[in-house]
Length: 124
Image (cartoon, rainbow, N blue to C red):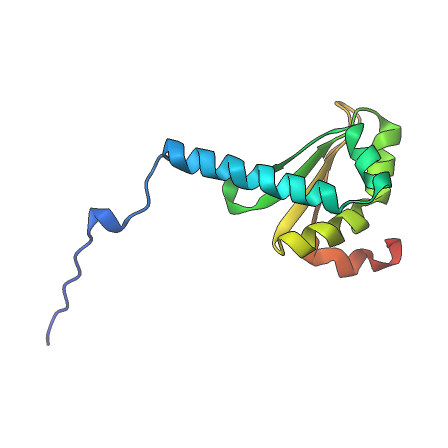
């Protein structure tokens, strides 16, 4: 019986720590996706986003649009627009999520994957 021997070459493994170039490229990607998303939004969603802190992150291998709401009314309005925002985001990145964060101590964040939009079709 022949034994196959496999050797692991350390050059083939991914780096444990991201390099500064990796960090810069990730930041540029997040900026570009944010800009493209915002420009694709209608004026109503753009105005709504201007009342929030929002950003795109690609941490943990998943692209996420995070929207941090300043008050409960804004949080409710953002949740009402989550389907149209999800449709726009799905056109840019098909494996993304949207996380809507209410004000501190006002509840838990709501998270939706853009590939789950069919579940929310009645809200569109």
